Amino acid sequence: MLRIGRFGEVTVFRMGRTLLGRVVYPVHCFLVDGLLIDSGCRSAAREFLGAISHRRVTAVANTHHHEDHIGNNAFFASRGVPVYAPEGALPFVADPRRIKMNLCQHLAWGRPAPASARPLPGELRTERFRLRVIPTPGHSPDHVCFFEPDRGWLFSGDLFLGEQQKVLTRDENFSALLASLRRVLALEPEVMFCSLQGVVPEATTALQRKIAYWEEVRDRVCHFKARGWPVRRIVRQVLGPENLPSVLMTMGFFSKAHLVRAICRGACGDAG
Image (cartoon, rainbow, N blue to C red; front, side, top):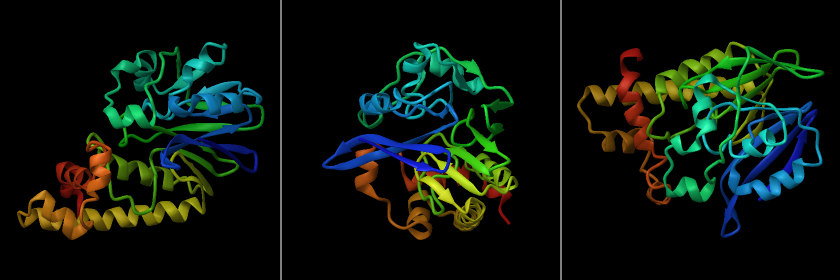
């Protein structure tokens, strides 16, 4: 499935595999002045590449190495379009077999083909825009965002995802995520282009709300952890019952328990 929209000078591509008529874990990528930010998932390659082949793409820039963000890099690299990725992402772009994927990830997004890529510079320039590269680890160690200061555009990759995000994957770093959210909040962005939500207007307000929500969750988790509560009980008390169908469908890839464990691992010492 592919849907195409626009927000001013930014073309928005929403893609993903469908199941029973619904998109399973959609992903967005964005085309601005010839620069494609992330290349989407390979499972939607036929529709996406058919649509974008009629548009000018002068470069591709990846926010991080996950399979739903580098899925179509090989198509562009094979046609001489320069592909840029964070330094830590380069080994995964060159050899996507290094990406740990379960069956759900294979079905939803597909495994990318190998592609050649160059390390991201500190700033990307197009004919009309300049995008600063902002390191934002947490979702993955190599994650970056792109910020266009004159327009107040923040291309946030998988940093934001939603104001009341209640799940994480197993490998995410909560403390690093919270620090990265504060880092981009300090930029006072006006519009956020999120890989899950698409276009998020009033970006600064949305970031403030997410940070406040996660700080509240963190404080409550740490309170109950200090009382010796087990993870499952903390999940039910703070976030509500685990969504078991979602956990089972994703083979444990996303869960509320991952968020609680991530907070317990490193954030409780920062609370209060």
